[in-house]
Length: 540
Ligand SMILES: Cc1cc2nc3c(=O)[nH]c(=O)nc-3n(C[C@H](O)[C@H](O)[C@H](O)COP(=O)(O)OP(=O)(O)OC[C@H]3O[C@@H](n4cnc5c(N)ncnc54)[C@H](O)[C@@H]3O)c2cc1C
Image (cartoon, rainbow, N blue to C red; front, top):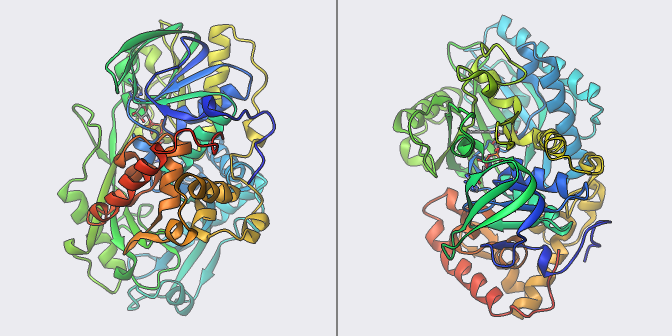
């Protein structure tokens, strides 16, 4: 079992739990929303010595944070737009995630741009120059070449060896570069939230904020319907695309991004991500992203999503058709609708810069910037009532977003916090890559929990009394999830029902046909964990 991090507390009170029973009624900081941003804010604040209550109306990673492309971006796109500061921030945060805070949940991701007839020689040179500039960003951010190797040009033979399903006719080579990827975006959120809880933050799901000011929130326990007030010195609104529901000055204009899910055998042998050029565009690509669980994601779109904000956004038929068409042009096989085993969409919380002056992005006070730029640039917006809203940004830059938001909250609330520590603070389970590689636990658990793989297994053994063979077997054909991790989801990660387990602690739900196969195991994990509530295996 791993040692708790220095400063971390252990014991039941530090764990993540559904509902508000026993939650404090007065804290230094209330955090609204437990996507990656809110979880990051909770961790940043609690490790500065502040008392924290962090809540989500639904569950950890219920919103946009589970619908991402799962990439840890180096900021190349912003460099191309001349936004050097934003690009550098992304590259620096990528390096921190991959080398310090979360090596266990991140991997280097090889990316291949196939050079086929839709890519002119001029485009090839421009793309290659861009990749080299991206490598310059990596170096300036201090990220090791061992972590992210340098880009290079491949011959057609080399490109086909890495991506055998590519269309070979007209293929003259490929451009290979490296970026980061996260094992699973929702797992990163759970890990950040659990780390915050391990330092003493009160992390509650099923707790909806009904109203907020800078010094109080009105909450509803979604399990019991009971409402209560909590007072605070500062309140951070990290409700993502819903942030404007709580603070009227925050006006958002969401944009939908859709991905398809394919089985890996639809594009057999694909060992790299492929950036398929969108015909007619010089700089836009459709991404084909192999996942560690036997699926491949294809994405993504960028469609204005006006009107009421749904809890779970849905992909549209035209988006699915567009993605299939672009990928079919780059690969030998013509993809059909029945190759699509799942599809998911997320909403980017873009600031509406045409709103009142005080709702504008401080980095763009004129409000004339394009929404595509704003989508990944974050903004920290104090409101008239004192609530500090943090929106925009991306998964990759959550730590910097959290640092900026807590700085603003400390100043707004006159709080006496220590300096930010998260730049050098490993998440639970993190360790240098050679240490992770030497671990003897099952590879899947190491990939998803790092050095805590042993804690996951020890917990499952103790709670269930079952043998490892049963705890570590895939819970169904084509579903590599194990009973051990489902049990841990309940005992240590606040999972309260089957949906939490299958849609957020694991991602079985991304393939609807697999989900019913996994439901019995999820129900069993809940029953086993609940039957052992007095167990000694607690804490962390
Ligand atoms: C399609 C797509 C792909 C992307 N791909 C990438 C990528 O590959 N890499 C990358 O770095 N970034 C990516 N991003 C960006 C990234 O996913 C988002 O910036 C990030 O997830 C936003 O997180 P958040 O915590 O701010 O919001 P959310 O994850 O939406 O969290 C907000 C939370 O607030 C809760 N909430 C709302 N209202 C209340 C309330 N009243 N009370 C309590 N809780 C409430 C919600 O339930 C939700 O859980 C992508 C975005 C999209 C849309």
